[in-house]
Image (cartoon, rainbow, N blue to C red; front, side, top):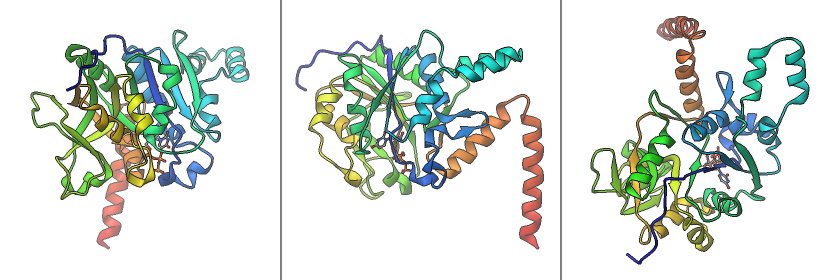
Length: 306
Ligand code: UTP
C-alpha cells in the first residue's frame, strides 16, 4: 500500500445527496415529480435521508441536482406564504413541521450536475463544497428503517474507530448481483470487514460475493482524485464503485452490515413495502392500515380462488 495520511473521520460534517438521476423506473410520475420527492406516508424520501444525516451529526447538506429538480430546492426553502397562513390560523403543530424540514443549524447547498453522467460523476460535482474533508454520501432512494441509531450514525462511529472509509452493505440473493455494486471482504469479523475489491453490477457467476452495496458511504476526500480519472464503466456511466475500487490500494475501506432494514425505494415494490412498514409505525395509522391490509388480502385471495 502506498503511503497516504489517514483521514480523520471523527468530523464528518458534510453529506452529499445525489438527486440528479432520471428516475425512469417511476415514469410517468417522475416526468414532473423527482423520485426523491415521492412520499412514504407523509414525508418525501429526501426528508428521511436528510434526517438520518442530521442525526449522524452532519450540518452541511450538499444536494447534487439538475435543472428539472426545482422541487427539491423549493422543499428546503422557506415557504413564507404557507407559514403565514398556518401562523394566522394558529396551526402551530403544522407550522413546526413545515419549519423543521431543516433545523436552523443546518445549511443546504445546491450544486448542479448538468448531465446525468452517473453516480460517480454526481459525487464529483460536490467536490468544491466538500474540499479536503471526509464526507458522507446518502442515496435517498435507499430508505433505511432503524429502531436504534440511524445507519449513517453507525457508519461514522465505525469510521472514526477504525480510521477507515465505510460502505454500507447487505446480503442479497446471488441472482441479484447484477443490480448492485458487490464487494469482496473476506476477513469479515462481526459486522464489518476490510474491502479487498469492489465491482459494479457483476453477473451472478462472476460476482466475488453476495455482499451488495447499499446507498450509504463514508468516504475520504481522496475519492475525488480517483473519480477525476475514472472513465465511463457499467451502463456508460461514471461509477462511484470504480472510483472506490481505484482508491482501495491507497485507503482502507470497510464494508459494514448496518443494523436496520433497507427499502429500495428506487423500485416500485420497495416504495410499496416502505409505505406499509412506515404506516405500521405511525401510532395514528397503524390500526387502520392493518385492518385495510387484512381485508384487502382476504378479498384478493377470495377473488383468486374463484
Ligand atoms: P439510479 O441508479 O437509481 O438511477 O441512481 P436513477 O436515474 O435515479 O433511476 P432509474 O434507474 O432511472 O429509475 C442512484 C442514485 O444516484 C443518483 C440518483 O439520483 C440516485 O439517487 N444519480 C444517478 C445522480 O445524481 N446522477 C446520475 O447521473 C446518476
